[in-house]
Length: 231
Image (tube, rainbow, N blue to C red):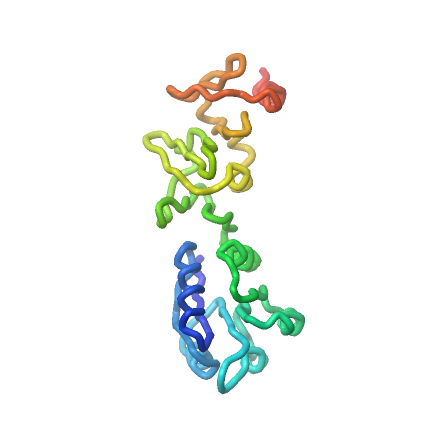
């Protein structure tokens, strides 16, 4: 499901920041830049809008006054430099209250609070949707099928996703992608390695063989591996 959104803010730089964050995540489609609440009202009358990024301190009509005027408001994420209005915002059933300046990680947390059908959760630079992963690599999202992943290796501040026919490097911690991968299909065998169960050829001693790759089994993971694949 695609999410149509608008940005309602009187500052151009705020529009640039929010749009830049949204562009890094699939499924978000910008409908219009609105620089005051009047423009936003007109846009809502003429378009289907699922999500509003709303600033509070605007000319003509303040953010919450605008929100209260809507009979059936869409989902709202407030973006404000004023923390003292947060409580009022939550009383109006907003999704989240982002205090400017906010990081991409904080923005992702807000997006993850959206309760909409088919809105996959985002883990920093990794996004999962059905049987695919969207990996943010080299400032773009690369789509890979879960079935094509042989294993994941941690290399310092990066993880290396080894696929059937190529590799992708992502700036992320292995602990984060573990949360994203389905537990029934993947297993961590070492502090630096997560392997796809379906691609394992053999387990021998302290090694897992996948195609031409030899992957070590860490001492703290050995019992778990042996129990899982016993019989």
